[in-house]
Amino acid sequence: MKAVIMGAGVAGVANAYYLAKEGFQVTVIDRQDAPAQETSFANAGMIAPGHSFTWNSPSAPMKLLRSLFGAKTSLRLKLSGDPRFYAWGLQFLRNCTPARAREKTLVKLSLCQYSQQATKAVAAEAGIDYDHLGNGILYLYRDQANLETGVEHMRMMREQGLRIDVLDAEGCARVEPTLGRVKHRIAGAIHCPDDESGDCEKFTVGLAETCRRMGVEFRYGTTVQGIDVSGGAVGGVVTDKGRVEGDIYVLSLGSYSPLVARNLDVSLPVYPVKGYSLTLPIEGRNAAPSVPTVDEENLVAVTRMGDRMRMTATAEFSGYDNSNRPSDFDHMIAAARDLYPDSCNFAKPQYWSCLRPMTPDGPPVLGRGKQKNMYFNTGHGHMGWTMACGTGRITTDIIMGRKPEIDATGMLVDRFN
Image (cartoon, rainbow, N blue to C red; front, side):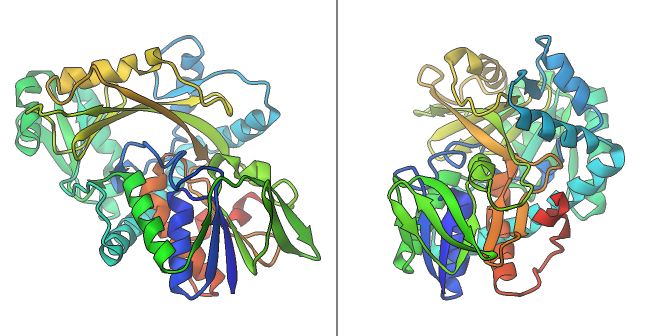
């Protein structure tokens, strides 16, 4: 059996790995010259079930509205002339109720916990070095009232078995000693000791090499232009370098998936949300943290990756515009300097932005489409690194006619059709 996977990000490569293990002859197509060169390239690096909350909170509409008037919020909106954005936005708003936010958060949490274990297994099987840290993540608060709200917010996670420790400022300094010098500015933190981190690009590149040794063919520098459909089945993928045919097809092109899927007779409400990240060399600094941190006050994530520090912030609805400028990163630099002033060389920033493929309700889009040989593994949003191995395994189970090991009902493409 031949499988064609569109997309060589972490989700597509993980799917290739699982299909190759099942004996498929796999071809992966990607427009870049190497794997993980778009959304998977420079993300926050957090493998974080503790960060599984859907963005569809009851407070999300007001955050978006405030952002239009210049407020610094976790969600930032730029008005667009794209009708797809408004259609997606209406679905997003319909999911901003307490009941739906809870339902979708629990779907994401189940997937993230499952995928975390799958990622560990794949890394061990393939022997991949990806700057892994397994000492949890600190969700840091500077205000006591906000900390108490955060603890209450995490209650549903704890009820599902997620380990959570609530720390005061002294406790934060015990978990991450470099915070000792700034503990007077910290109210406390929620520590999820089972959360992890690692370099998504390094993992994906290493797994792609493992796949190549297993016989997977990677066609880099090849742009998917469309999908041919005939007689209730996909007949091939049209690219700028010719047609690619297989027995089954998996669409894993992130934010670009809906543009390719236009003739598949399926509703695929995946829309890009721009994220920003900054990577800086440590260069011998002696106060680089070893525990990833999410500064909940400033909405900035800080993660150590070997001899580098990665900082991420902001989710911006600006269509397919993936540009950035140095001033876009000023906020995260200031927040990181405040917590970790001697963690890295702030004079040598590497700027990056990417398009996160968001669904209007939070979970990714998986399962078989209207054509008998067409499958979806896309729409992972800001949690693609955490979810990728799990969705690759679930998609492979569905292709093989097996029941996935966790309930995937809330992730299937059918929920939009």
